[in-house]
Image (cartoon, rainbow, N blue to C red; front, side, top):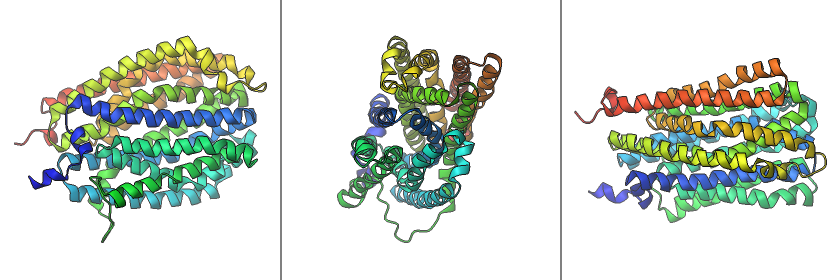
Amino acid sequence: MEEEVQLTRYAKVMLGDPKKALIAMAIPIVISNFIQSANNIIDTIWLTSIGVDAQAAVSTIFPIFFIVIGLGNGIAVGVSQALARRVGANNKVEANNVAEQAIVMSLILSIVLTIVFLLFAEQIIIAGGGSSNMDACMAYAIPIFVGFPAIILSDIFSGLLRSEGSSKRAMYIMVLGAGLNIILDPIFIFGLDMGISGAAWATTVSMAVPMVMVVYWYYVRKDTYVIPTFKGFRFDGGLIADILKVGVPASMEMVLLSIMMMAMNLIIESVGSVEGIAVYGNSWKLMDLFFMPTMAIGFAVVPLCAAAVGAKDYHRVRTIYNLALKYGILISIAITVVLLLFAEYLVIPFSYSEETLPLRSQMVTMLMICALFMPFSPLGYTSSGYFQGMGWGLKSLSIILMLNLLRIPICLMMASVYGTLESIWWGVVAAEILGSLYGGVFGYHSIRKLVSGGYPQFRPSE
């Protein structure tokens, strides 16, 4: 009975009514991701006044930047399922150890990445399709590379907080960082006359500042379930393996997304040059904004399913999965309607200058075409979150492989046969629908097998 007192109010919500738990976890993730995406859009709006080269540079560097974000998010997902399982079992000692392993491992990784990316910046940009726009790309890339430690640790702490049910605090980290970036952007870009590099420095500074909040929660208020002290710290191979069995495939998912983005830039460049890349990058930022509810529900599923596994309540896993799928599909249908009705207005902030105005019609076309796959996307995201929560990182990775490995050959074929940007957008739709259907069927059959006792390691106590 004494152990039960250790559960925080956030952890109790996470282990309580599934519907309330899903809403409590997902809404803060939606808000934080929405603000983060809005922040990326505002970055682009500021840079619109600089010109197409600046927009294209951001679109080129973003996939490279996304690789590092993906590594951080991947470890965060691995930590989330490993730690949430211990919260579900109310094992505070192991939960603290999981958090400490993740923080140290992430710090080492981020420092190594910073050094490597700075040393090979030009080669990396060329691989990302930025050879024709090198000066602008370098000006944006270097400050971002310097900020890798702050960016990765921000992801890790957000994952730690979500895994103990404190989704609101994870949101505060993201909101503060995005809010600071929105304030600093015009100061650095125009006030300090730093141009495109000012936008990158604003991002780096704004990701570092929220770490103060984390220190306050852990070591001043001390009201979190997990309190990493690092006393007598040493690497624990078993806990690291538990984190990485999901973290590595989850990181690979993000890396694959980045590789796909870079490959798409190269395919688009062959058809529409720098302007085509700007159209794709700007439009996809808007799509990311509307993806937020579906992605947030998928992220929320990870700790909720993991905590249910820790408590050995497998019927609860099915309830969470079904609720997440229902909410995701309903929201995505509404989003599709919004995109179809208001696409021409949504693209105005990206095409208000004389130089970017010619991009507007193509951006509208891309949004309206890509809106058609939105109702299918929850099938993939929800199943991916479920597999990650169960500790099956490779099964989750297979869904992302289907989504992204299909996109490249389909879009390449469309570009080769029809040679238009519009044909590439239809290729994106075809790949997204096929990959999502695969994810939905795979997840549905796995859930049925789980509740029927088909997985020996997840059968109720025997």
